[in-house]
Amino acid sequence: MTKVLIIGSGISGLTCAIECASRGISTILVSPFPSERAQSVLAAGGINAVLRTDNGDSIEQHIKDTLNGGCNIAGVKAVTGLCSEAPDIVRWLEGLGTVFSRDKESKIMQRPFGGQTYPRTCFAGTSTGKQIVTALVMETRRYEGKGLIERRFWTDFYGALIKDKTCYGALLYNEATRTLESVTADAVVIATGGQNRMFSKTTGSTQCDGYAAGKLFEQGVELKNLEFIQYHPTAIETDRKNMLISEAARGEGGRLYYEDGGKRVYFMEDKFGEKGNLMPRDVVSKTMYETGRDIYLDVSFLGKAQILDRIPEVYDLCMKYRGLDITRESIPVKPSVHFFMGGIAVGLNHMTNISNLYAVGECASIYHGANRLGGNSLLAAVYSGRTAAKDIASRKVEQEPSDWSEFASREQGRLEAIREAEGAVFSVHIKNMLRENITGSLGIVRSEKEIDKSIEVLDHLIDVETSGMVRYDSSELEYFNYSLGGILKLGKAMLVCARSRCESRGAHLRSDYPEREESFKKATIISYDEGEFNTRLVGEDAYEG
Ligand SMILES: Cc1cc2nc3c(=O)[nH]c(=O)nc-3n(C[C@H](O)[C@H](O)[C@H](O)COP(=O)(O)OP(=O)(O)OC[C@H]3O[C@@H](n4cnc5c(N)ncnc54)[C@H](O)[C@@H]3O)c2cc1C
Image (cartoon, rainbow, N blue to C red):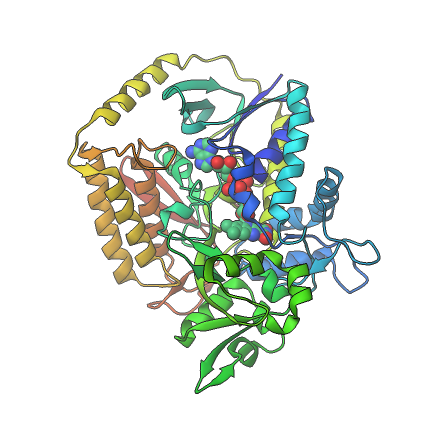
């Protein structure tokens, strides 16, 4: 029987575990926290699928919208698979117990989201992610009862067991015992979410710290399209993070404006017409940035009843963090880092360039090109989990047993030395510098000059880390805290990718290269080899690991 190790228990990891277990595959699912605390539960707006065609919508149109929204660099085959399976995915989730909102005729309601030709975002109030996670956890427990899934919490990914470009399992860090354990498996699936914590403030979870992607990059795993970082147009800033005002607020009719001499200017509608407020996120954020004004979102005209019925979480959030009553007042909003189109490079079957190592969900880069459409990432999380599981089952991989205990005890020794080291520079200081630099140079608009300055700082931080000058700060609240090498290299890789794309496309806007260039209608692949960061461009659907 095949044994699979899945790292990360958000929507993509849970789906992959269920799909593996349903095929009789023995599955271990690990994460530092239970699924109920994964970023997936924050998803408010909904999940996309074409459920009706009587309004003119079609799967072909969903494919077209997704490719156009991503500025035509996502693969046609990948996106076709994603959109074609969407209706079945929504029905499957409903069958597992996700309670989607329904209309008077008992049909699943669908609201318009940015970049869609027809309304196709299915939602469960404004807690779609929570509802989906709850349903998937229940199903996971069923397989746990049958002995097919083992869930391990308070357990972190430390690194993969890789030899000759093949993955044999992973080293896991047990937070309670503070020890490393080597766990072998026929296939390993990385489902660790985006790289939010590489920035000072985002709308996402601090669990999405980029550690796994960075560590794997150090270990020879290729990454892709790291320059494409989605700024969601509507967030409100608080002390520690940016709180998302879901696109559902604009889907329900919310209007963006700024004030000029006491008069409201509905700049998105003026520039793009009736659907202006629901242009793709890259377009809205860019246009907001270009106004140079304070921007407001008005939903008050919808009336209290509709606001409380359709976007209650937006109401609660504004009341809680700003004391703002959105049934009467406008919301001051600004763009915030939100989603990562880039991540671990995978082929159509979700395998990386390392045999038997897969990546799914937001940590993988394949469907969203240069800009993701709202509602497509929950879909991609489920679809990618399913796709990887199907591939693992069809390949019937069964590896020869291998012994990694010596490697594990060597790494344990290294970890203890790191923990005890009394270097002069606190780890928290290095992380803050990393975040400040990434935030400062990978804003909505970037330039070579700013990127180069940050690369210089990161090169220095990498030197500090490798020369053993770091003192690890155990008071930090982050769960796995004893390695900075990976995230520093991931940070540099993000900058190198952004520097190498000498054009403006989707969420990557360069002040020094403002035009879109045909020669860059490709994905950026970056690899790390003995200190060298190497980039290359690959064509649509061409990546096979
Ligand atoms: C506020 C907000 C609202 C959103 N709304 C929507 C929406 O309405 N529609 C939509 O389509 N998308 C939305 N998104 C995006 C969507 O929620 C995510 O892309 C998706 O849920 C990602 O799922 P995932 O399984 O890939 O990762 P996550 O849900 O982020 O799960 C990652 C898992 O990996 C674990 N992990 C991380 N690092 C390690 C490690 N080192 N070792 C072990 N485990 C680790 C975490 O603990 C967690 O269990 C939203 C995002 C945010 C932030």
